[in-house]
Length: 211
Ligand SMILES: C[S@@+](CC[C@H](N)C(=O)[O-])C[C@H]1O[C@@H](n2cnc3c(N)ncnc32)[C@H](O)[C@@H]1O
Image (cartoon, rainbow, N blue to C red; front, side, top):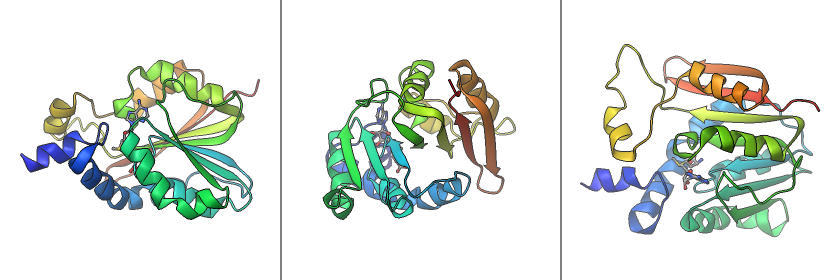
């Protein structure tokens, strides 16, 4: 029962269980995020966006990489915005970070704004993946990159692996080919993917076309 309450709060954290989930995501996704970020080149003056920023740990990691740039985080959960702002208090005070409440389907940014957009463990929940990828494409600069990071990878040899979470949250584990196909359909180019075999992690990086 308690486990279910916690898991259900991965979708849109709120209340007591949401606070617990945010804490556990900040800890539980840290190693996955560090591994994925090794594959993305980031310049110190980059303008970055973390979509579905949860508790704000990734925003903080990115702030350490962009000494002269800026990092935005968006999440549609009010509690996540609050927690991300708290964790990034110093980054916000010195103007390096800004957290906004927004859904991925309608991002509150001008077109061609970001050098890279990062999305860790959130793609499963997006309401219209093709449209939402195109919306991210809109806010990326030409040749800007989108990095999608996953730990819920479909496993043909073990179809039951994620069944309980999939059923409870009404989401689907992803496959490398499925994500790549969706990115290509959304207009991205140069799609590259990286896997961490032992842990079963997937990181996919795609580029916005140079117009
Ligand atoms: C499993 S958590 C991952 C949080 C964070 N990226 C991390 O790695 O710890 C999924 C996050 O995506 C957010 N989210 C889900 N659907 C969203 C949407 N349509 N727009 C914006 N954020 C969304 C949730 O509120 C939640 O914070």
